[in-house]
Amino acid sequence: MGRVIVITSGKGGTGKTTTVAAVSSCLAALGHKTLAVDCDAGLRNLDVSLGMSEFAVTDVSDVTEGRLCVQDAAREHPQIPKLFFISAPARRSPSELDADAMAAMFGEARESFEFVIADSPAGLGVGFTRAAAGADGAVVVSLGDKASVRGAERTVETLRGMGISDSRLLINRFDRQAARRLGVTADDVIDLAGARLIGIVRENAAVAMAAVAETPLVLYARGGAARDFLDAARRLRGEDLPI
Ligand SMILES: Nc1ncnc2c1ncn2[C@@H]1O[C@H](COP(=O)(O)OP(=O)(O)OP(=O)(O)O)[C@@H](O)[C@H]1O
Ligand SMILES: [Mg+2]
Image (tube, rainbow, N blue to C red):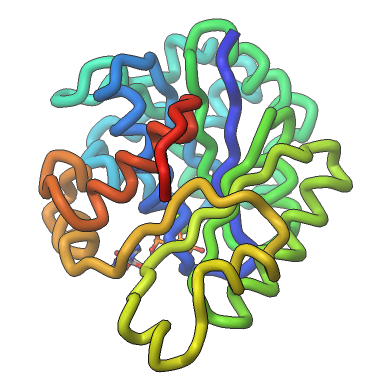
């Protein structure tokens, strides 16, 4: 039985889609059959981050509306074996995806994949609740700034209210020097957000360059943020790595 993990954040633009693409690629590279699901209906872009734009021919609505089963809707990555992907519908709003059908889709996915990683839209609205439907746990992505941390805190609380208490915090785009100048430490962020840390990912130009090249970060670079995401993926599968 696999685990369904939603990647989310209160604020937009914190790096959710980047995290889904990087962590699911790493989990597959570590040997786990992994499904990345784009739940950002209408604003999808996980296909680009995964380098799978031409595979976005089927989508979540094909499953939720009963046209395809999860196995048939999922497309395998051309270069990363064991990594599968289902796109979000391009021309639907999140409210057009039925909540129960989303939960059923994740339940079905749990049967055939070890990890199911869902990309949530920004905010805590209907798209978020659809993406989190039936999740076993969450990774809340936050930047180091106050607005983002406050969004993460609200997200952790909202998830708890939905019965998802296993939330882990990922601090993204961390710039040690800037943080030192501002007097902010990773511990401050963790305390404010109220969740255990799963990783700290550094600010790294390779992330944007991989996105422009439409290549998964793990195939584009080895060190830097790619390394940080690999460590986060290893912690997600239960390894006890120091941060
Ligand atoms: N560690 C990093 N270093 C440098 N740039 C990064 C890093 N993580 C993400 N980015 C950049 O930040 C931008 C936003 O990332 P991304 O699209 O993953 O965020 P998001 O949370 O999914 O946004 P949205 O809320 O709109 O869905 C992108 O341009 C991405 O390349
Ligand atoms: Mg996104």
